[in-house]
Length: 186
Length: 179
Image 1 (cartoon, helix red, strand yellow):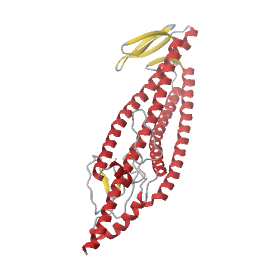
Image 2 (tube, one colour):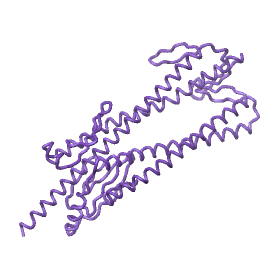
Image 3 (cartoon, rainbow over the protein chains, first blue to last red):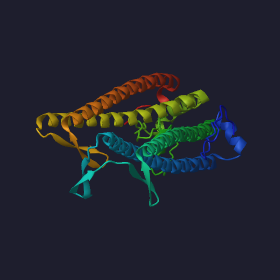
Image 4 (cartoon, one colour):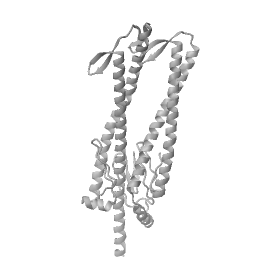
């Protein structure tokens, strides 16, 4: 395929080859217009599938980050209460619409839910460090994901443009043939 | 998302009808993550074949270079980011309003201890601390809002520049408007 300024593949997403000249592209592939269009359409579908997947991952991450920030907030509050010797009184949800009062005394350690039915006990400082690390990882993954999505959308645009140009070239060819045919008929 | 190129229309379900005798003017619409309704295709009278051929031949001579493609891609990215920023601005404005309401309620109440939500629980917090917390949150949201508005301005400016370039090269054959 004739390409220029080629993009390399990115994390499993194949780059769409940019077509300089439709004629050369088709002759290199040795395909007629309809099969070329079919292949490009298929490519487009595959890109769409990957896009759906990435969007779902992005939504998950975007929900996770505020959760981690809330946890950090709680741990920070517990830590600030530590020095004062006061107890923290909080209302927490027992069930939907039902709340109960809790007295939280001097908190030396907190338990963190690590997932997979595992919960570990940490001191407040360790907990803060761990949560901070999780938050940074989540934010970094989100950045990479967003970049992937941008790359993917670019490839989708390139493929759509190529489809349009191939089809247009075909129409142009047919018109030329028609124009060549009519004078000979008359 | 639907877009049309010259006389080839892609309906959303990818079933397409090809009509070689349609379209007086061709256009090259821009596709974004949101649905972009293309301009209407013009009439399909057989009598307009001659003008079509002229239009067709001039249209297909406009080649798309790699630089054009990159401009189109960049426009797409900016458009997507613009929508995301607009959504974020909406959320930030709502948060600002809620914080303001909370602040007002706080002034009106005469309780000494306020139940302030931290994480999933409502901790009993003295009024002054709640006030300072709300102030802090309001400041953070306002700064965020200002940043987002600035980003939005810059995106719109960049998109205007790209529009000029692309319309300049492709004139009628490209559609960069939305809905």
